[in-house]
Image: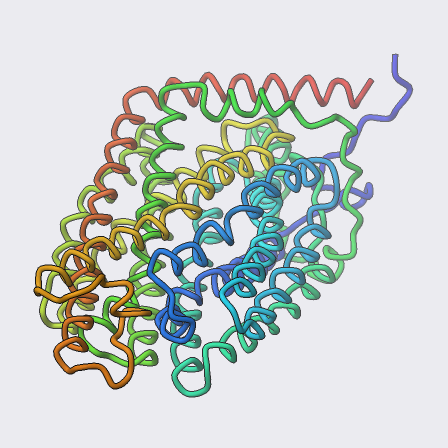
Length: 520
């Protein structure tokens, strides 16, 4: 028999174990949201200033798509898994802090690029740094929040996506118009380093499975929640909590990659949940990369105005949808786990025709007003999907599961979504240019999408209209992909409750076995 004393509950600070009050956990979640906001500012600012880059470096939309997509996604996806394996074993706070410094530094370096190749390489560097945030962040959140609150907590974290896309659009558009696109990269890149310092100083590494053990203890004591079991936590000062050392994590090794992949993709319901988020992201990254250029090309608007409009739309509608998806699913899933799939499935299918309606209007103000609606419906998919993934995983599978999902999602969606949409735009623009009876090929006649200075007015007009028509047609064709994503979620709903119950039982058994090994 082991001579070790029994471990004290994780909520008993008197015995040296940490006690994290709701206020402290909310503060930690808030810092992670800010980090994710900067993550998406630095990732997506190129969507707004892309038109200026395209004209300055005389790029095709396909080349612009590679800057937005695979250049960023290549190492972002491949490094995500080894970083997650580290996060399942070592200090997640340190990993996040270092990652922020790396990606912010490379974002600033993008502003020094003078050639397409330089910018491409710096974007690869941004992807290297950003690979180190989400897997450890999801793992941290899952240790701070019990299962029935994870979809909401992860939705709040995912709120950094529309916040970052919005702030990046507003700031990037204004800076690029008033100064230069190079200055936009430099100015938005540097401040993120302060967030890295704040996270390192304030956020503490919780014991693995802290929230799960809290819930188990609460149930054992007949309480309905961890807070009910341990009493009022409010007297604990944030400073004291932040300084308390977390209980040592057990020495169990993370599960094998094969075991994680089987849990993540091995059932009908989980496979279609993963397929749904991947296909929805493919459409989102692709159309998102050309939304701002569309309004510039179609309506002749300035970067600052387009950045402001698209930024506000992203923050308001996409942000509302992200939060709504998590909270609505946490509420509805108490009745049936099927709602983890039904909420995003219905939302994506309803959003598709509304998106198409917006991008086929001849009035940009009407288009912007319409876009406020589908964004709410569309972004309901994030919280439910990520909540399901965390809830069916063993404690030491969580970071790896997120990284594996992100590897598949980002390699396909982020890597190829923007270049595919750009390629579609190039093809439709070529066809539109030829239909106008113009001699020559569109790419050669209209470098960067515009006629060379001093060209015949007829050529200039043909280039302009072909570019606008091609962008609209390319966007509409890619918006149809959202309905495909919604179909995957509806298919997942068929067996998801049974699949989740089976996976949760396996996860509980795995966690119990790990605890037994640690106690022996």
